[in-house]
Amino acid sequence: METESEPYVRLATLRQLHRVVADLNTARSLADTLQTVVDGIVVGLGYELACVNLVRPDGDLVVAAFAGDPAAEALITGRVGSRASWERRLTMGECWDGLRFIPHTEGWVLLEDDVPQWHTDGPDPRFEDEWHPEDRLYAPMYASGGELLGVISVDRPRNGRRPGAWGREALQMYAFQAAIAISNARLRANMQRALVRLEREQQALRASEESFRQAFEYAPSGMAIAEMGGDQHGRLLRTNDALCRLLGRPASVLRRYSFSDLVHPEDIGTLLRTSAEGGRAELRLGRRDGTYVWVSLRNSVVADAADGPRFLLTHVEDIEERKRHELQLAHRASHDSLTGLPNSAELRARLGARLCRRPQSARASAIEALDAAYEGREVHGGHDGHEVRVEAGGAGEHGFQADGPDRYTASDPFDFPGAPTAPTDGPYDHHVHTVAPAADVDDGTKGLAVLFCDLDGFKSINDRFGHHTGDAVLIEVARRLTTGVRDGDTVARLGGDEFVVLADGLGAADAADLAVRLRNAIIPPIRVDGRAVRVGASFGIGWASCGMSADEVLRSADQRMYIEKRSRSKAHRRAG
Image (cartoon, rainbow, N blue to C red; front, side, top):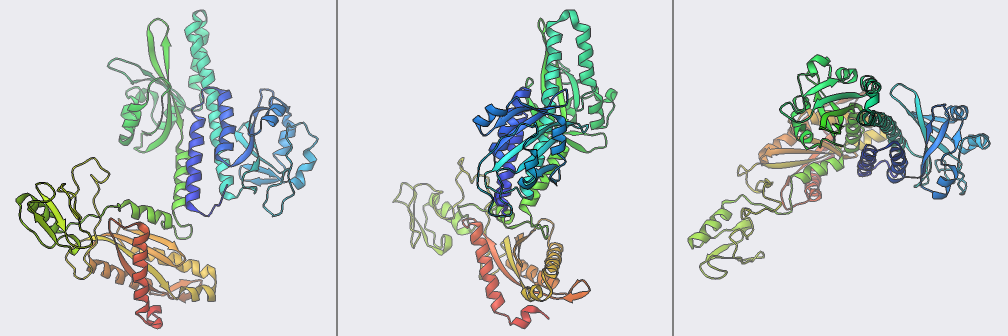
């Protein structure tokens, strides 16, 4: 699934995977769900062909949905393969965690069995990991009880290669979510049939109520019935055992609450925005022990033909594991795998969040110039050292004119460099501008310091003792840097032996002291496999300021680091 070493590619894949998984829950029927499953593989996972083989009541598997090739779809959709042939396939080849890969060198024995299959033409592979036209990759789907629901078959990766670890994990997670979607689609179909019978078949009311009761009570996911309308709108009337176990509360206690009483305070808006009929939301519900669990709520209105809506039927699905998995994937995409620190992409994102394209000065001269404009007097010493003159004539009643490279005139009293932002609805209304302390004198200004750290002597350790020792040194340096900063500061690994520290609210002297403390923390010997090694560190201090990009800020700190490195002898840099 594309290059797996680039964090932004992983994030893009994760976003695409999140979108196609979300689509699984929007299908209104089992057939739509199955077609959405295969369409999501072709659109979001990078395969040209995909099909779902669904287990029938007699145990055999039927091709229930196909995507990617209309000719192949017409050829095999609806065809059946025996359970024995499928079980044989799912025990052959290579086991990739929850996936089963059968290379073409082993798959020739399957050409004559009764499993529906298509044949693709193409040249033999030129590389070891290149996809062969007769390679087979299967993703079994299991219900929560462990029974086989079906098998996803995929073919022809768009990049022409066998999926790597990232691609396998994405396909495995998608198969897990597809199994949940198929199970839920079946459950919703059963519930809908029960509700239709309740409305249309009054003569079979008792039988229909029993069917509904069993589907409700023994559903693998949480179910709840709540009042609809009136003063008690939303109050829980009935809950099944699965929901009671999920929330750790008995049914008698849950009847005292509504979902608005149980939802996490940050998710109350999501709950209120969820419509009654067909509404769906992902939010957190409170457990008895005070913790919260991520769930997916799906509402249906149980109506009476004569009296209108009677109560609300809510399906509560536990998605805690999926949310945890998403957070883990997002963390892995934004953090260095060796040290656990934020990586280069995450560092730039955090730094960029503090910057805007429009510089803002807090110097008193800008404010004085604004006051002078309304008083009709002359003020000298404007923004960035340029002279600001206020004249009674010129541009309207109050005109401004600056001498120097930034000469300008404006009738808007806010339209001059360094002026406070005018009260508009622009993108900077609520932005707190980041400013840098003066370079020549410590005037007490506090800013966002960017400390660029490059290790001295690290290459010789790597060359002499190997990458294992070098990795251990990097891990220990990362730990020492993290220990030496405040809780709100950021320590990131830029790459190789380069680290960056973001520390807000520091003056020039504070940043210099921090660099000294961090250098002194790095210098002590580091023990690796009974051997003591030492590295030094060179620090360059840059300052983030609005009007600069993240790359410009980092480049400034990097240049200062090299100036500081060259100013010391090699022996002094190594620090012993």
